[in-house]
Every structure is written in structure tokens, then in C-alpha cells.
Image (cartoon, rainbow over all chains, first blue to last red; front, side):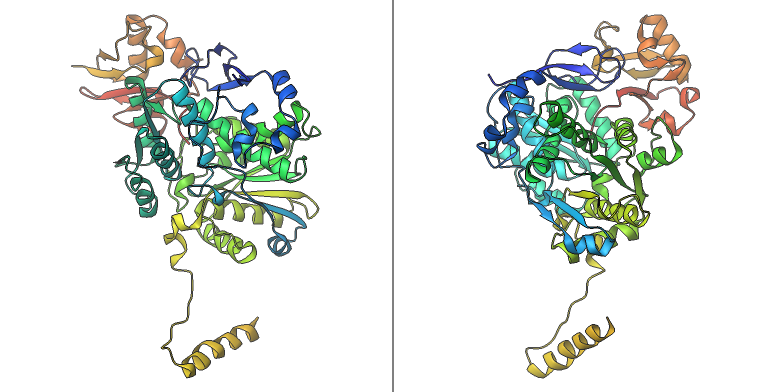
Amino acid sequence: MAATAESLRCKECGRTYPLKALFVCEFCFGPLEVAYDYEKIRRRATKERIAAGPASLWRYADFLPVNGKPAVDLQAGYTPLVSAPRLAAELGLKKLWVKNDTANPTHSFKDRVVTVALTRALEMGFGVVACASTGNLANSVAAHAAASGTEAFVFVPADLEIQKIIATAIYGINVVKVRGNYDDVNRLCTEITSDKNWAFVNVNVRPYYAEGSKTLAFETAEQLGWRAPDKVVVPVASGSLLTKIHKGFWELGEVGLIRRKQPVVCGAQAEGCGPVAAAFKEGLEHVRPVKPSTIAKSLAIGNPADGVFALEAARQTGGVIESVSEQEIVDGIRLLARTTGIFTETAGGVTTAVMAKLAAQGKIHPQDETVLYITGDGLKTLDAVAGTISTFEIDPVLSQFEEQVLQEHVEVINET
Amino acid sequence: MSVKVRIPSQLRQLTSNESVVEIDPGPVGGIIMELENMHPGIAERLLDNGEVRRFVNIYVDGDDIRFEDGLDTEVADGSEVSIVPAVAGG
């Protein structure tokens, strides 16, 4: 038994619970988080052992809350950390990296949390997995359920992008479209959890699930040669991802794999759903829920469960949580694509645009080594940019190529 | 004349495992006090200094009371109140 996890602990009042399918403190309703024996991790998790592990996030199994081998491994994680000199130059920065998590099996970072959640759910004896999703999680739960032969129900807002619905239903699991926004879906799923003995990966299995996101910090540090960057820019929906990236860097310092250094953690939201950014700006300790209205549907959580913890992480490290307009999101997608070769979904447009904004405001300095977390693939949200692209169309005739393509091309080049 | 209050699993040991409790219509705050009379200990779990705890969400017919009048939100006859842990999703 490889387990290093010891208990679940309430982040609010500190009460501890056994490692079962519990997600809130029975006393104060605070969130439960996995607590580890870091001495044990320190003894086991050497750089050599990690390097000899699989080319997936399971190379960091010593830091994950499971007992044995992954129940299902589609090779999530260990995605490229790409140097982005052209994007850096455009923003007046020098050392910029993109963590390209579009390169996951179902093309978003959600594969990280799902492989951990499903493994833990099956260890705990569940026969059905389920989730409330804005789309990416649905894709991932469906794929992992299919690969492991597990019954699955995924609940999504009915108005979700068609690509995400198709890319979920294709795996032959149950897709329930709920007429409401994500917060409605989430409430319904939380109520179902009270009555059904199902593993809702982001409800009753959430403490285990969320730990999968730490691997984004672990990989970044390993890929940089075992050190932390100066700054990270992370999208914020529920706030869990940002909180866990923060925790991941802390853990590496705690077990001696990197020199203790906490990167400045910056969060990115859309103005159309920016409750955490609003709380940050107003200096509030709590997050006021909003009704989302944004093209960045994967970030459209109006009542973010970990909003207060994302606020804390940003403030504690000297970071910022900023928001951008719908136009800036589209511009962000285009900017990232034409300077890095990485096509992101709307969430990555938000993250790129926020980074550009922070660079322009001087909140990211040219010499800061910064990592931009791109968490989902652009093919998932084609509609967002469909109206912004241009192409040539000609008959298969040389003269048309010369007159309509080359001529125009020369004009474009001359203009710039 | 009653409203249905849906009790989450975390509080059911206080309600003898009942998942629905029926209470007279009135403001949400009054309904919580009535719940407390029927099942002592429940108010402390939902409220902190007279406010809804930050990790508790309360809905009336699916609408978050934070978007309505908070604890003063009126609950009409036949309506449903749901008490739901906030820490889910994402």
C-alpha cells in the first residue's frame, strides 16, 4: 500500500475525518481537504523515482490520495511546457512558458482530476460515477468511465457548446442536459448526492479529485529543472485549480524537491462571470455570487466553491485576480494562437488576455519568469472565434491564385 | 399550509434521518428557527452570528436566497426550501 494520505481535514475549523467519500465538514460545512504524511512523501518521492515513473501524472502518485495503482490511466498529464518567446516579445516580457494542457487525452486539464477521482471512487467501492460539468469535465469523466467500464451520468447545462455535448455522449454514457446554468446543475447534483450512492467526482469525491490539479505545479517544476517559476497565471472557475497549483508548489518545497519558493499566483476570470476578481478588487474576504454571462462557459461558475481560497492564495503571494471583456477573450485566443501555435478554448483566451493586461499594467515584470496555464483546446469552442477568421477562396486556376491570393498577400505585407 | 425543507445528508442525524421536514410558510430565518425548535442544534450548523454560514447555500424553489432577501426571503405555501453545501463543483 503506497498511501501517504492520512485523513480529510476541514479547511475552515480543522476537524478531521476518515478517508471516505465525504466533502464537507459535518459541523461547519467547510470544505474537506486531504492531509498527508509529508515525512513519508519526503522519504519516498525522490527525483530519481519520479523520473523513472510513467510519462503521465501518475509519476507523482506519492503525492496523490490513492492506495494503489490507477484504475484507469489514459496517460493524463506530463504535458509540454513550451517556451513562448514570440508571445513574450509581444507583451514586453522575457521569460514566458506555456503549460499546454490541451495535450491531454480529452484535451483539457480535467483528465488530471478525473483519473485521480475515478481511481479513488473505485477504491472506495462505488459502481457509478457522475459529475456536474461545464463541459470539459463531462468529456473527461465520459472517456475515463468508458475506458474502465464504469457506469456514468454526467450533468451539464442544456445550452453547452455542441462540441462538448457530442464529445461526451460519443463515449456511450448517460448525458443529462439540465435547463439551467452551471450553478443550477451543481445544486441539483449536490442534492442527488445526498440520496444516491454515486461517486460525484466534483461533489462527494471532490477532496480527492481536486488533488489531481497539484500535478500541474509538480510538472512545471520538474520541467524547469526542479525549481518554481516567479509567477503563474491560472484561470479561475471554482477556484480549485488555482488553489491546488499553489498547494503543489508548497508541497514540493515542504518535501525538499525544490528550494522553498512560492510563486506569485495570479487568477484570470471573465468580466461576464468574475465574482472572485470582483472580491479581489473590492478587498472583500468573501465572494458574492453572480449570474454568469460569458462566452467562457468553462469558467462560468457564478458561485465558486473555492473562491475564498483562491483569493487567499493570490493575496498571500502578492498576486492579482483580474478579469477581461468578451472581446479581450477572443483577442487572447487569437494572440496565443498566432504567437505560440497553441489553439485554446475560451478559458485560455481569458488567461492569455489577463496575462497581457497584467503585463501592460506592470504587474508582471519583463524579467519575471512566468508560466501561463492553458487548460483546454480551441476545438472545443470553435464558435467563439468562427466569425474572426479570414480565408481565400478561388477556382483551381493559376491566374486567380496570382490575382486574388498573391496580390492580396502582397498588400497585407506592404501594410504591415 | 406548509413548505417542504430538504435536509442534506450532513444534517440528517439531527432530523432522525428525515430528508424532508414540513414547516409553516414564512421568512427563511423564521423557518430555520422553527427547524431548531423541532430539531435542536440545526440552527448553529446553518448560521454563524445570525448570518448564513459561508459554506451553506439556501435556495427557495431553486433560487439562491443571496440573490433574494437573504434570511428575510419569504417562502410561500407549497414552496420548497433546499439547504445545500456550497463546496461542490468546478
